[in-house]
Image 1 (cartoon, rainbow over the protein chains, first blue to last red):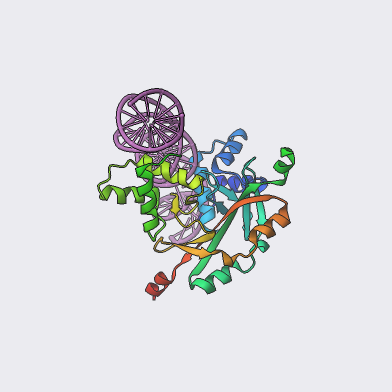
Image 2 (cartoon, rainbow over the protein chains, first blue to last red; image 1 turned 90 degrees about the vertical axis):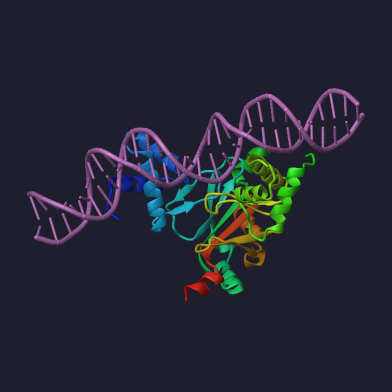
Length: 127
Length: 127
DNA sequence: ATGTAAAGTGATAATTGTTATCAGTTTTGG
DNA sequence: CCAAAACTGATAACAATTATCACTTTACAT
């Protein structure tokens, strides 16, 4: 994989964002910063970085995919009210890979956990 | 929700299938059995049944959604070789909801776990 | 430095899974 | 049996993502 200026700014934009942005969102941010980048380039590079493990692709949330520069093993929570995505630490499911491999005999290369519910902020607002 | 013949055969087709079919797959099976059903009807009814909890929608696998008539809480494993989807029992992640709620203060309404890897059958073939 | 092959880009067309629309049909309860 | 609500098939529309392609950059051997 060769170096590319575009890939670099895409990664930086991803890493600087506290949120877990979608491809479109990153594209909009870069457009505002008057970069002449193409949406296709954003998709291309996010996918490329995801498939080589440099970033993480979060699928199965709504309709769009989101990306995460945090490659530590962790999970995600999406608020059904505000749509915000939160990180959940892996300790909530200890030894889940070992247990599943032992039980099934399958080889597990990766796993994803997504929680749906209402976040604290939205719970406070509800009252 | 009114009765409909189409919904009934869609549910039967889903329940009779060991696999976790997609909407398209169910549509093909019904077409072969010379039903004049429409693809839109298949989608409509799968989604309707999913949202009332009669069946389960499995999202975030590849690009298409899959459906499961097994509504017991359980997880899924998708084989990266053959694409087959297997059920994983919930015991691999005990108390995951309670732990996550305690840790975050969020309210969790649902959660999904998807494993990716190689199933036993494909592992045997590899040798 | 320079030439060349491989990799990357922007612009946009194409694809794909899914949903919306709508005129006509079926179901339901009084 | 009748009206209102729900449902259907056919197909258009949609939205996210990917493919295409002519052109530009990058890497690196000479």
